[in-house]
Image (cartoon, rainbow, N blue to C red; front, side, top):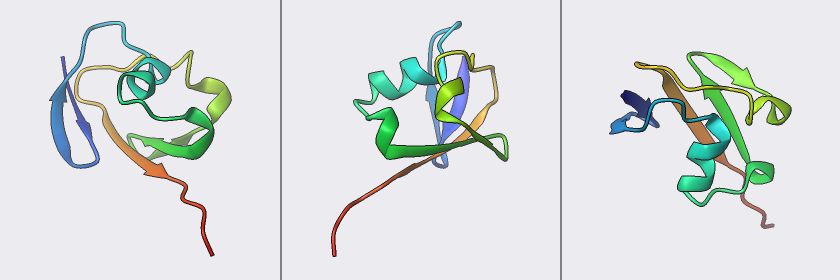
Length: 66
């Protein structure tokens, strides 16, 4: 199925969760914020959020520094 991640179309498998997508991309769930179809997804919901055809995701990484 096709989804949009940070403006780029990509293929992912049916039944993939948001948590699974983050793991696939080697992203630490504690260091990102995710918006799905215009709504923020809480970290507690990453494992339970099934991705669907046409979803649009924005994934923002937290970067430390100073």
